[in-house]
Figure (cartoon, rainbow, N blue to C red):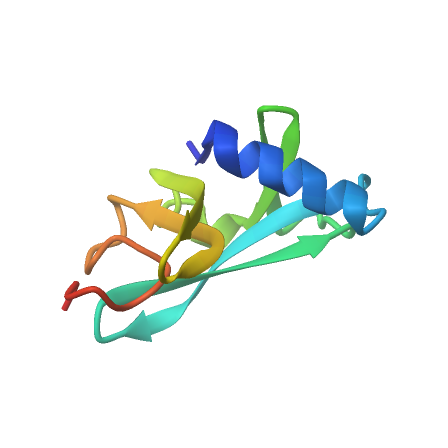
Length: 109
């Protein structure tokens, strides 16, 4: 299902500790469509609905998503990039179509 890279896991654990939110999960969601295809979003949350949410764990982190989005996120990989264009978390999803990334740019369209 959802995979977290080692680099993203380390950065996310650091962020959770820095913000004193070790009890929170990373929520990932489908945010809409753009010129490049599906766009994704992420947030830190500590409220999980057993009725509406699916929780997966990878590398000691809780990842939560709405059950309705689970099929569209089934091949998602959460990574952390740090380069000339900036740094941050991205969602790469071979199941999502488009440029397979949470951000548009770099000639993906």
